[in-house]
Length: 594
Image (tube, rainbow, N blue to C red; front, top):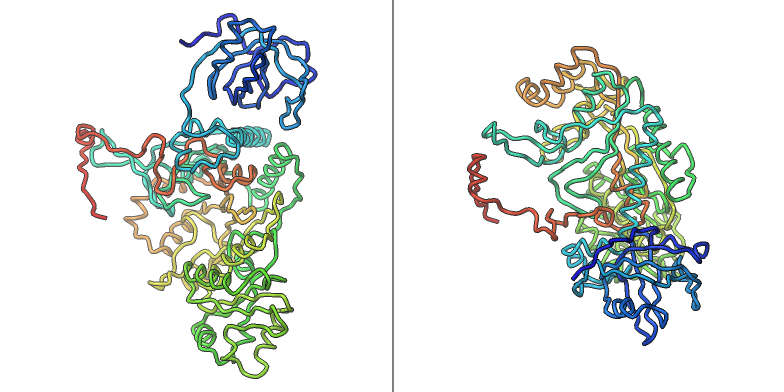
């Protein structure tokens, strides 16, 4: 039967005790990491969220207490009182390795069955098992430290924004469904039968309305929901450090966010970031790195070979250029010995898997370069390509030819994959980049129609307004993304505040008056009553925590995450509900055949 802590009160956390505490009487609580029975000597490693301390039981220990220690097993919950003393056999593996507690009172607060996996830092247990027993997985020190770091990020962010005059305001969790780029999670209304609330993809409209309300500096750690396919850096529910500012322009918003990042990295990791952060236009990012969230910790930029190979009699190159595309390459320096033909074949399959028709290459391992398309080359063609790429013996060039919408992202993904394979990406290096000058519209490949790249409240640059309806491809948005090491942390923009311009923008997006009124009528109405210039952004708290912790996935910094199919393995969520609950909501389930 479990004992109680009557008469005992925790005085210290396990991992905080040091040699300075020798001679003190302390009380600690935690879980048994392991018990070692050496006959007349028993040691228990007791664990809490701060670390481990050794409990010692010997000939001087009361027999009843010694027997409790003898019976203790992994994951039992104990409370121990005793005197801190110097360890005879010190350990440099844990911070408390110089001391131990000579136990004078021991309570078994809870016994434990043998857990389905051992609670150790470097668990080799399959992730799906650990997620099923997430409450046990969360006992592991690496995950606990990740969650604690996430908590520190939230606190520092709040402190920083409070110091800079921001007001924390909560916005509704059940809102009107409006298009924001992803599919909404819908909540049926019992009272308004047949109608639905949506869970917010972001507090976008509400924070703009707060600017119209005169609050001028809003901040919220906002929960957001998007019904979209998951990946390592995406969860269906996530947290944004969300902000909006009035009477500002792009520079002001960038400055306040650079200050936040500087504070976070200095206080949590002891790193002083270089300010201001690098800035790169969207076009430069795509043309150089094949991504609008470039990882600039290593080189291997994309190079345009179109002019060099325009007269080469190779149909793959020729057709790509004639159809308005390009021929581009990345060069892996001194990689010929590592990127064998077999590995290049695997990279070819990888490229095909993300949309490319194939992958050409030049591998210069021996005296003569091995070119996969050599039979199509005329005299001097290979030399011209080698010179254009500054290729040297030992290098490998990977070449893709197609429309730019295929070439650039394919080479961008290949660059990252090759960088990983060759171990070119440095650890513990943090490279922030602002991506600016985004196109306002992009052309849909299938329909040929111009569609918005951003939400409909994004402000175009003033000098581009004349092209809104005549030449959409020339319109640049006053939008900006903050990226870190190849991950998008934040997206933001200056907002449209002029009623007539907003109407003009809706028309450019081919929205009818009925659609505008149904989806955004209340916001459009608000603009008639005096709107300050404003803008903002939302930083992914989960993503910055993932990067600062060096985690591989958002699941490692989220207490109870979802998996690839948006389910939670521990609670078997989502689940069915009974017919009575559905009837109240006026909902009938229609089976969809897969």
